[in-house]
Image (cartoon, rainbow, N blue to C red; front, side, top):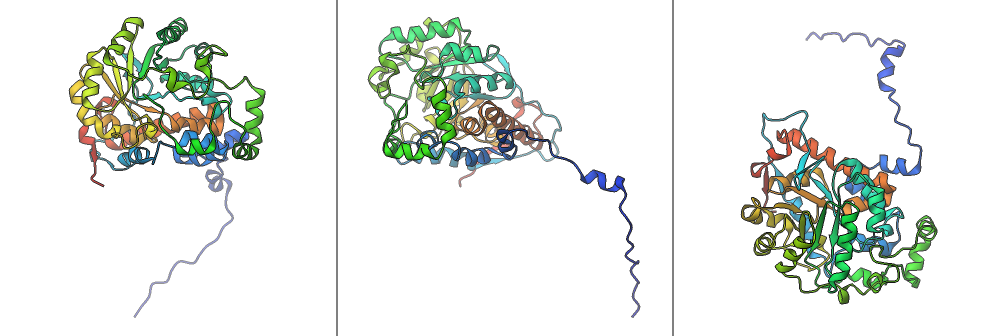
Length: 413
């Protein structure tokens, strides 16, 4: 049996032209913040790093849900059940992720959701979030329970699409003052939240003695002691308070919200708000087809299907699962957004495919804020938009409006 001789293993000295392609230097990250963010390739990565950056009580407040956290888990489980269905020969190299939100162009179908007490996550707080949203070309909704005022937030993002999230107060004069300041500072829209009759019970917050400003119990002191940088930033910047209310106001006191907030919101309140505000009104916290219809009939320009990120009524309907029922009923009269559980570009594509005009993200950008301030929020948005663009390439959808029900299926498990 004959064999074929293998050629001799010849060696030679490598030439520079052969080695050079392998010597790609990484960009120099000048600060620890930049180095941390450079390691984050997903919102999951941001979450893992964020947990190390803040005291346990702050982390539990941001990350946790109400009661047994079933709604929190189900929100995420619904997105995990999504199957994205590409067109085999329809891939596109350069999809357009821009869309329109409330009749104006947005760079992506993303809205940064209102989050209370944002300066607990990072001392730059709402200013950083608003500035990042403005730079990215997407709207940002400032919470009634923000730790930065309506005016100061607008100054931080003068060219941004700033919205104001309104908790309607029993004393309408307080809400009218909020509307007047928002109007004066050029806010684009008002977002009325309707699913907070009372504040949901977050058990871990109760155990931690969570409050604003932080209460110095033995537990919180121990947690803060492991984060001296966070403590130093909080102590050396402006006092931590509910800044949309006048300093010293009863409304600015921790624990007073249930007593002072309107606890019996009706469709007539939406109509009243439309009469007071010369601009778009968004209604957040819709959790049924019937409520969607009533909100739109009362004058809502857009609605947000939301269970408050699993932080209010536990076992509440999952917004993503509600989308296919709501959109055919009101989608021709009002824009429909969805929140609660969105943390990837694939999630955004799924929501759009099921009929949403856009998504709202909250925890995801707070993780970025914890890790790197404004840069961290920008990093979160960049990740989400890059993931969405890649998903659209592979789905074969040249623009956001091309993503439809045929591209999305909710698997049974």
